[in-house]
Length: 228
Length: 383
Image: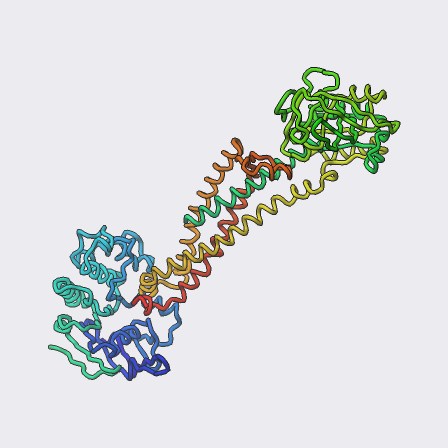
């Protein structure tokens, strides 16, 4: 089943009087349960594509459909609510809330969803266990390594039971061991729970683990390879 | 938080100081020179002639007996010259009965040298310290009083200084000398002449009512309350609370800019987190409320704390006073005490609290609005 459909996506910026075509006619389908890497050189449009798919940015032209719902023309508050219910985000710089513990950071999205405390806590603990942080649940972000923080970010992204997770360069700030650990965790979640992951990345280790690799250049898809 | 705390504390502190200074100045003037009500022969007020007396002053004494908390002192009041071997000065010679005068004036509490007619001494006189310094005299020195008698004859008589007083009003101290009425009558060879009746009420709130009552009973006399005699004091008294709120409002306006600046900085520092919250699904209402609530929360901790510390400071200086003796001369020239005892209306604390909370709410709106303007994509990347 197709979970993400984009049709002829275009995103143009004007910089210093020049029009930059960050996305230039991107059409793609992503199926449920895929482990997809979007790759390409800097400035190829990877992050812009993720932002448009995630409803954080609006396309200049074209449409985005998530699980059958077109989000391109949604109003701000509806889109925010849609993101809350359907999309998980993992950011390059982790973006955890520094004053909250790992458990509280993971619970936070469920708090926005108005889940009861007991349910929030149970799921957050379960997710932190799955990402191997069951002994770190009370630690604040500054008491954890980068790899651990990114694992908390993955747990947070999954907390709302999203239809898919968008991860923008999730391993860019991690060392090899942390990268390997994180990929193992995400791969396992993908295999066991059929969670759909879409990464933008430069990292060959991520590309190697992806089941589908979409390559962008100058805002266009130049290759789309599914591994067997 | 510190800014709010200091703002509230300093606002209340300055207001309590101002109110204390004003109240003391009013009380000083009332208790030393004006009293609550004065009664004169109307002609005396136009021309301070010695012959314009209050002929029925005994009736005033009888009238006062029927009113609780009513104290009266009938005075002889003559303009004259006070001179010593070292100089001379114009002034008012006030003839009193010390026991009665003590009921309406606090001068007897302001003695710095000698005493306030503790025992009768023929031709004893009590003068102000400022005048004593000017004439270079001290207790037991002789000075000469020169004035006109009812027959317009110039009389000069020697008096011996029995006491020297000092009030918070140095001009009053320079201008007024007190002698016993019987001495003046003897020197002028007249009966006791009454030019002024000074009245003091235990309850200042009754001044208007008693004034009206006196006017009705003594229509031929000029009865004036202190509000008429010294309209500047009365006016200052009336507008003081408004002034205090205006001072507080100015401080709170500065505070509002502080709050806005602090919260804008906080938003700038946390834009990555705020961008993340917007990205993952925090809606605009919640984001707006979060910034507003944080601002109000900070204000509600630091505002009441500032008020509480201000209350403690005010209570301390209410009892112990704040010493301004380094600028004593300047203050005393305009009737202020050198030790200022703070004062504050309890209602003002509540009013200030309401103003702080209102300021906090209003100040939180702009930073919250700015938070809503953040672009989540740019904020997450720290642009």
